[in-house]
Length: 227
Image (tube, rainbow, N blue to C red):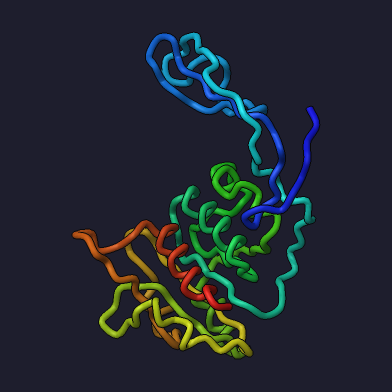
């Protein structure tokens, strides 16, 4: 099948065919691409399916740019402090790439893109945004601060500032790192002590926090909205 590559929504898109199929047994409706994420059999009950619609669509394909492990100079980076979920890490990598972050620091127990579950949700972002692994986030952050980096963090604290105002604290002439922490315990207090500013995301519902990958996406947008 002829495939055409084009730039769209900050990813490389490929022109392909999408089928919409419905299971004759249980009624499940699902999409099927030429990648065959699912098959002609129903992914729920393995029953026979029928084609109800077919169309051309732009499908996301891996970046063609070769990955390098050398960190990019300048800009904003993110540090993942002991993130447990490989799915969250992959999602954060994808958002970091999409928002143009310079580097992703994976620290402590945070899984790296060598983990298949990370690669699954990163959808190729690990090949186009640089990353590195570090056992001790505090040691790393102290080193960055010594080099003149500005340290920000995303955490619920009494002295935290609204993330909506984050642009006011950004110095475009300096390198910056945003720290996001463990899904349960939050950011290490020793890291918080190194921060120039701590940001929080206002909540409108009863829950007190967002999923860490969602929270990073919100913070990344706030930091890069006018950058």
